[in-house]
Amino acid sequence: MTTATVSNDKIPNNVHLSDDKRLQRALEQWLPNYLDWWKQMGPEGFQEKDVYLRTAISVDTDGWAHFDYVKMPEYRWGIFLTPPEEGKTIGFGDNFGQPVWNEVPGELRGTLRRIIVTQGDTEPASVEQQRMLGMTAPSLYDLRNLFQVNVEEGRHLWAMVYLLHSYFGKDGREEAEALLERRSGDPDKPRILGAFNQPVRNWLDFFLFTMFTDRDGKFQLYALAESGFDPLARSCKFMITEEAHHMFVGETGVDRVITRTAQLLRETDDVRKAGGIDLPTIQKFLNLWFSLSEDLFGGEISSNAADFFATGLKGRYKEAQYEDHVALAGNYRMPVLEGGQLVEKDVPLRNAMNEVLRDGYIDDCQRAVDKWNRTLEKNGVTGFKLRLPHRRFHRNQGIYSGHHFDPEGRPMTAEEWAKRRDEWLPSAEDYTYVDSLMKQVVEPGRVAGWVAPPSKGINGQAFEYEYVKL
Ligand code: BYC
Ligand code: FE
Ligand code: FE
Image 1 (cartoon, rainbow, N blue to C red):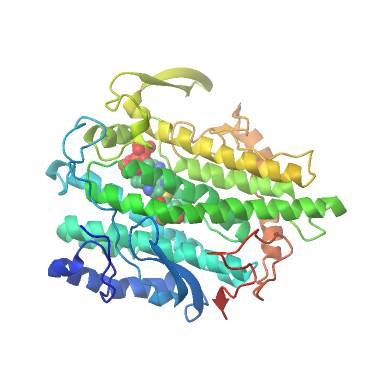
Image 2 (image 1 turned 180 degrees about the vertical axis):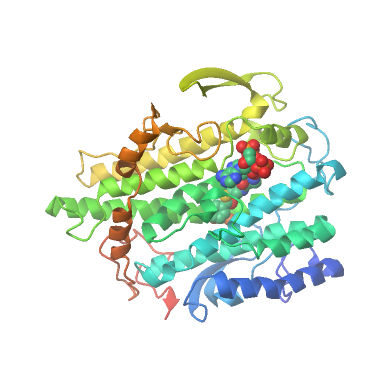
């Protein structure tokens, strides 16, 4: 299969869409519904503006993307899968070593559809969560990055809808419609996973969301890139390429906020008075988005996860790094609550696969936090370090949900928690303050007072570049 795209197709793709007229028609029918959704729920206020965007045009490692001015509704959302590999076999589970599937095995149909729908649902959800942020962008550069993330999440939805339409017949088409009907935060038709119903009110939320929540995306996509269902594996593999920029926006976004805060701390002890975001507030937002994102890995002890692994639908992060791909032997030791006490328990490894994936995620998050702390140090802040709260802190999924723990992971009563909650998570007053800083700054080269400019622009352009033509 070639990786070239046929540029005059309505839907850019490297899957020979024009050879499958039925599928092409089905997707072309979904397209206007998608565009209606985008216009209604996509970025508010900038649909007619030219934005300097990256568009995926192939899966070649160099030259996969093209940068140019595009109006967002005219973005060419395409379908790209990494090329199939000759003789590829399933890398884990009970079917280890068997050839990968290019059709859906009948007995796995329901489970696989569910995984694809869950993955697909997060993509439009995040666009919905972020739709008002353009109104308060701290710079033209940030405005452009927001829209870049948004259009690519739109493309990720396309990637999952392609799979639903191609491999799941009528149910797949119905699921594809339903992906456009659920709404983030809507009590009657919410998005599927918790964090995707949480408001992203301001740019501090946004930077922490792209840092922590998109990073769950990275780990889930890596796990699905191992799938024995090869079209899913190949779709996710290419999605990871785009994901790197989303996490870059988050990680450097937070780094720029703390850089600015550190500058203000040289002049004053009262960062808020100087219009910055004080470090304790940043820590609380970090605690919130890290814990919400940890929940996205599901329960510590999960028969779903065991089934996904056993059947070969979802592997581990970079499965090749493990020696034993069957994982029938061995346990994962974890502290479990029994009668209010934490007791170490051995859990069969397959049932602990969510926790294994979460471990890798937490390490990756810690690496970024260490980097932020080096930024603080370099900028003369010695008395404060950011830190990840304990994995038991503020959890709403899994064995620790329904219980209370402090950021060190120590159990506490509901009364103590209620008393101290606002020390650890953003209070209404913290939100009011951070929201009050959010004023749109869009003159090229200017930046809001609560965040430092980036060290460089996008695609070799200067920070002053006119990333969005207003
Ligand atoms: N919220 O066995 P359990 C991304 C449900 S992000 C609500 O513990 P399982 C992106 C669960 O569904 C990546 N419900 O969990 C980022 C189950 O329900 P049922 C998205 C939850 O199934 C930023 C029950 O609780 N991709 O791409 O092992 C911007 C018990 O489940 C939650 C994926 O998630 C939650 N947080 O694992 C844009 C990959 N957690 O069956 C995009 C596909 C669990 O009792 N999904 N539940 O009704 C999966 O692999 C799994 O569904 C999960 C859950 C890892 C999410
Ligand atoms: Fe995505
Ligand atoms: Fe993303």
